[in-house]
Length: 350
Image (cartoon, rainbow, N blue to C red; front, side, top):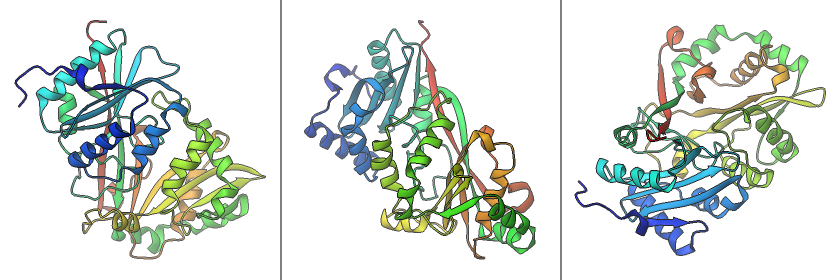
């Protein structure tokens, strides 16, 4: 428990950060929550290429880290990300009190978002016994209560859904509509995605993602170069070509879905494996607005399921409440829902 008042000015650093400081940050993050730091380092080194401003790092070695920033087009919201802390409510309270003095004319804090929703954001709320999948928040279990303890509330909620091999076999054993597969082939040019072929579609994928998510308040666009060098570079090692596809309609990208090999990811990153560990992660699904509400998602889902062998498990990840469409729990059982939240805090003195 923190007793003395901390002078956070001694632990606050403005961007750009020195190499020594980033090395110290890596040590602190890995002490609190072990993870692959490579993407974090790339992001921090590339921050000047992102549409953000007023970047500050608060770090007390081996105790707490948080990075603050603002979107270029926002004067009232401060975002925070890269949050790590020991389980000490008073420490976190003092930290966010200091942040309020730094951004006192702003109205709201929102996070955690690591610079952009292309990268890790939100806090995981439950199912901590499960190994983290690619792109999933890997926060410690007490982080949400630390935020709530200093006045944050949930802004948005999200869900992933683990479906056991038994649940999916029910579909494959008779409820999969094979007509969807034939209709998909008839109406769309469908191509498998892997680390070699994605170069043919990467520009179209980038443009579709930007167009479909730019209206979301938490979305922060990134350049094509960063999309290719950081985001795509990370996922290509784990994308599963048997279940990942682009769908073209008369030369236009209508939609795509990425499926990842979770067991490969977990093994290479030395993550804890449980009996309910998914074989596959069904993540990053995007449909052009011209084709939304016209059954394309159903076609894509049916076509992908038709490629499954029996005895495979999957997790549909990470969907906002309004997009929670892979809901098999009532019908098939053997399903577990994993919850996440994005937090906000209003300044009462504004």
